[in-house]
Figure 1 (tube, one colour):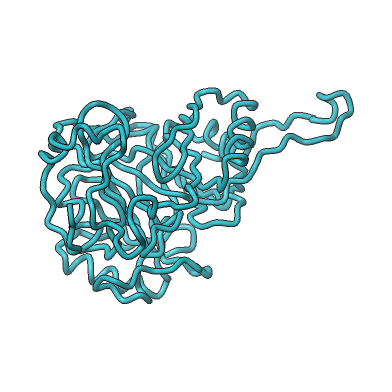
Figure 2: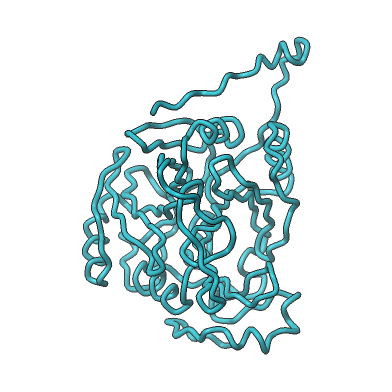
Length: 344
């Protein structure tokens, strides 16, 4: 199926000859990727002991009344675009269903010459791996223990992100951070229109049912991919084990966040939230026509060091202020055997 570009408005004619174009703001690239997993221990082991990321924050989910871990993995300081975050839902018993009209795959970047290293490492950890090539990149396809698809993508372009060198993965092979995500869609036309008009994406390539776009920003993790899967049932959008919850994008500042939000709403995509304080960043959420939940986020000046020093990142259980009076409940969450010494 070929994508159809939406018809463009004659802006000058529409505004009576005024050639001033709307300001779409700037989406720099990815900020973080968030997903709902099973057990906290298996999630920690997968990201830290297998993928070699650093545990930079242990806290609890801001939303709802059920205590749920919120675990963050990233590079040494938790730079934007290096962050993967999880909600372990097995203890609560909430299950999700993977399907179409839903984010499908977490895609992370490594240097292209490191694909062989990662193929050996994953197989050595007992993980089934399929080596593929798509859009001119070598990839390793595998799955999180809860079933969420992952891809390690061999990136040939320069990647200036600091790799985490504190684990047992050599820095030259370490995961750099987000490459992007793949979203499963019944049909791609409405998502194509959204990505180009609302998210300032440029179509890069199509290979059969697969379509690739690039955000025209200056950050990292700018590759968004769609895969047409019209025969799959609808995937769930709520919290639940085994599903990707959202892809967050870096908008840098509160002023730019408002500009991007106003631009998207002005196009008629009105399913957009108010700004939410997440402690380490501020977020706006929107449901895309392809079903994937997107987020517009900017980090606070302190970022993850607002409640831990750089040297201590990931070594405390950090409780959001509105959860402080429920520490006894939080202490009943599944204990996690960690590489780092967690102080409490």
